[in-house]
Each structure stands twice: as C-alpha cells, then as structure tokens.
Length: 318
Image: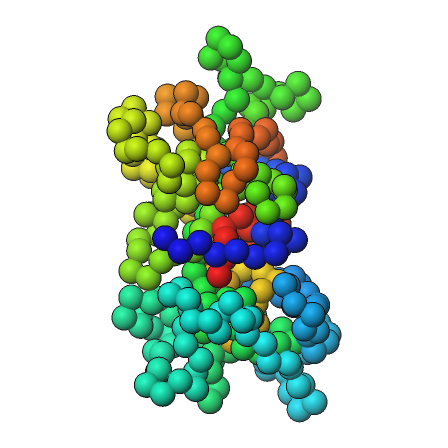
C-alpha cells in the first residue's frame, strides 16, 4: 500500500483531545438511548487554516458569514493550489481536471473510486465539485488526492482497564470503570493519536479499519502471518458488531473548495478483556510507539464526535 505523508502539525493530536472524543464515544455506546444518527456536518474552522499546511500559500480570508455558498460574494478570489506531490501523479491521486479524457463521475461510484459524499449530493460548478461545508479560501486539491470527497476510516479500539487479578479498575473520583483505548505516537512529530487510514479504491471500510490497526498498532507489515493466536484475536475483534461513532465531513486543514476529507469512525470494544488484554501491541508503519491510554466516561452525549483534527488525524493522508 502506498503511504502518504503530511506535515506533523496536522497529522497528530494531543491525548487530551482524544480523551474527550473517546469519552463521548463510550457515553454514546453505554448511556445514550436516543438512537440519534452519528452523522452531522462538522464546523468549518480548521479548513480555514492559513497558510495552507506544508506551504506558504495564504488562503483568501473567509469570514464566518461568508463561508456558505448560498451567500453571494462576487469579490471572492481564492488562490489555486495543488501540492507538487499531488501533481506528480501518484497512484492515489486524480489527474488534473483539464486532462484530456479524464471525466470523473461526481456524486457517484466512479469505477472503484467512491465520489459520493456522506453529506448527500454536493454541487458541481463548471465540472468542478464544491465543498459541501462552504468556502475555504483556496481552490484545487491542496494535499488531497481526489477531487471531491477523500474517504478515510478510523478504528477506535477500546477495553476496560484491569488490575493484575483481572478485575476492572474504577476511577476513584467518579466510581466509573476506566476506559482504555489504543494510542500511537507518530514518528514524524512525536505526538499521540489513534490509528486511521485512507480507504483504498474498491476496499471495504471494514478492511481499512482492520488493516490500519494491524499495521500501526501490531506492526503487521514487519511480521510473518504465522502468529495464529494474534490473528485469531484480531479476527474475533473485527468480526463483532462495531459502533459507528461518526460518518461524515471532516473539518481538516487540508480541505479546499474542491477537495475535502470525510471519514467513518468506528468503535470496537472488548468488554470482557478476552481479546485485547493479552494482545501484543507493537508500533509499526507510521507509529513510533503504541500503548493503552486511559480515558474516561461522562454522561454528556454530543450531537456528533469532534472534528478529525480533535479526534484522529493519525491517518497518513495523501
């Protein structure tokens, strides 16, 4: 699989932010009975970051009241930018729209490339897709490979913390069980995040979730596939019914007017410890370290999980 790199300032997240997201996730799983959908349009904040990540390109300033495409703004003159690494035509990137014979089918499954958005039908102006969350101050693809939505998947692997005797540990203040999730430390910047990755063309999201966890938290790229006990535990973990935490647009600093991130964040929880307590974590691929990080539970259930920049921007990205 082709790996994608990005400036560390936008590929990792503090553990504090992840804790907030994980607490929300488990609150949703154990305390919510509303049955509400986990999909909601993320706020447009980090997508206005200037200069554009990995460059000196300054976005056209977009005030909050001018973000929406429904607001007339004839003075809007965004800068056009597509990173050299994308223009080099790597296998994970589209061609320029001006390329003869390249006619992507937007709002549809285009061959094996999924160009449908989780947010519904997006606008296409002059054969160019429009970011459903609104203006970003820059056109082109930036660091993203695909015109339109760029789909990622994030496995959030959780268990209950246990003592040496196998008993669940409770928080001394709240009395609630202590939640743990798998966290990785990025090699490029040393910050902690959770695993995640881009969905390859034609790949099932479930396969992406499993692949990214195995590569970054179990170092599967460097191991033989002969460790049957580990394989069996991984198979059992990812065969269980997962919890879809969030599916939709991602407020990502790489987004442009024409290319944007979307993700599915999925929680796999081992409530018994049978699968995960003895699973040998080992950092691999983009991860320098991996560990079980303590989280916490609250009874607050937000309308949606926080944006990727405050949740799981560990995936390499284009």
